[in-house]
Image (cartoon, rainbow, N blue to C red; front, side, top):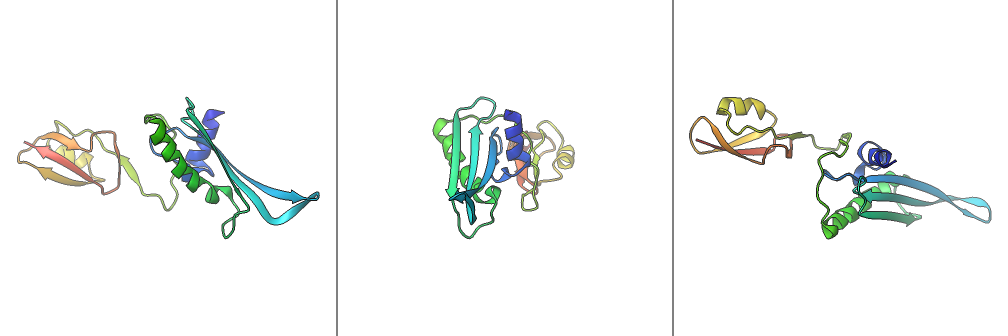
Length: 168
């Protein structure tokens, strides 16, 4: 069940609540309100429930918005961006560490493409250039061998982001 909730955040309607490096599970909800036994027209409760981290819960968040105005009638557009901001505060307040095994987010057309930075320490400058073809490279020093890199290997960086290499 926890993995199913993670897939809602990584691949489904909860993508706006996705936070890189954290296993967040969630479920959106849209409920039409009832009065005197009849559904009210255009009157909804939008909700989102989240758990962080989903594999070892430290916090549960439930967010509900009663009859939101001037928005798409989908909880995925209404509640999840707000929930993400609250989840970031929860992660910070509880000092929840990053994890490496969260589900990969399915990208939407507005998402920026990211790549994991490969380890190029010890490689020649030419070999490093080939491995870092998705990034902009800035060099410090002179020489033909990479002595250190920033950011370190494994960090995700936007396409054309800058990788700094110290060469000797």
